[in-house]
Image (cartoon, rainbow, N blue to C red; front, side, top):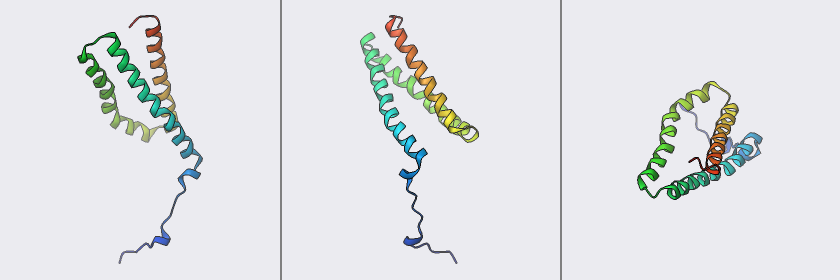
Length: 110
């Protein structure tokens, strides 16, 4: 016969008392809106450079394809390597690419 678990026996984990979860939650609160502000800025830049709506759609496609392709391989990599290191290098590479874009904009190289 199967065991029956009553409501009193269920384990409740206070996730907000876990330091690592709180740090991840706070960083996600700041990182996610920043990414969407970047997307809005990139779209605005694209529309200010050219009024061609085709390029506007290609911007969304270019932003979506790497995410779709790397979802499965990202899971495999996350199973084999330290997740903290993966997140650090992911955010660092995104910051460097955005910095390169800012430099290109400031020097009128776009």
